[in-house]
Amino acid sequence: MLTEEKFYAKILLFGEHTLMYGSQALSIPYFERFGYFSFSADQPNSLDSVSHLQRFSEYLEAHPQLPLDTNAFKNDIKKGLVYNTNIPLGYGLGSSGSLVAAVYSRYGTDKILKESETAQDLKTLKQLFSEMESFFHGKSSGLDPLICYFQKSITINPDGELSLVTGKPFHKEDRGAVFILDSGQQGETHKMVRDFAVKCKNSDFLRRVQEELIPATNQCIKNWISGEKESFFNNIENLSSLTVNFLTPMVPNGFESIWKNGLENNDYYLKLCGSGGGGMILGFTRHWAKAKELLRDYPVHLVQKI
Image 1 (cartoon, rainbow, N blue to C red):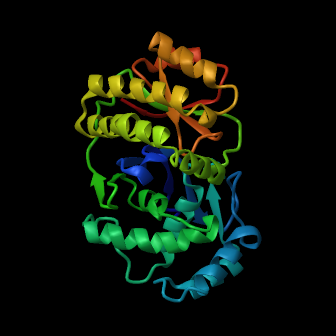
Image 2 (cartoon, helix red, strand yellow; image 1 turned 90 degrees about the horizontal axis):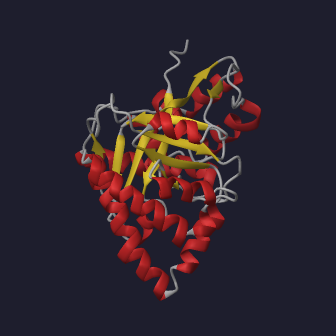
């Protein structure tokens, strides 16, 4: 019998690309999207044993150092186990991270509990999740499953140190919001990451990354955690402007004009959600109702009020 425990999606709020060059990063849970195990498919993106879970279980079995009861996992798959999820696949919202967290929670042996918040436990789990999620991506940092497992925001320093963020940065009753906008385009993560790395070999490009993009990113994270709302919106405006003007190829096709419209009128500020080029676009606004009306022709979804 399954308890149908839910494992939520995640959003990398800040730090895409720049983490590799010295910035901090901040990732948060996204509670509107989730996945859970059951013995019947009742979500549009259910992952059945033939197409997904069976191969994943074989991969895990081939890595006996992982503290998992792979026999129990394989037996449940034979009984018709599926992973129901409404997290869109290939959009950078943690669809594979959610599944990895769920497998560890259900089949892990000698588990690190969700209540544990020590730096060492976070580091240990991140490494374990990295090995598990590498099945899906070839190479994984392990961060996404960590967010999905603990269901709390996490900051990452350039040296790899992890910290759970407790509490809420802004009052929920306020009129502002974080939202995501679906570009309707498939992102090309590997290409975007590769292109950014190639550009960073140019000294002028790298200088702007280090002197402009990284400070703006770090300030947004600092303001978010401390709840400095006005400073936050000033810095997210700066980061949004830098992105559309400095990282233009990463802005999904057809979205440059609405990106700039938000900046010019201070109605909303857009930024990359993940590597860019497609997938979701992140948005921040002081006036959620107005921004939603202005973007009514696009699929826009609330992440949280701020």
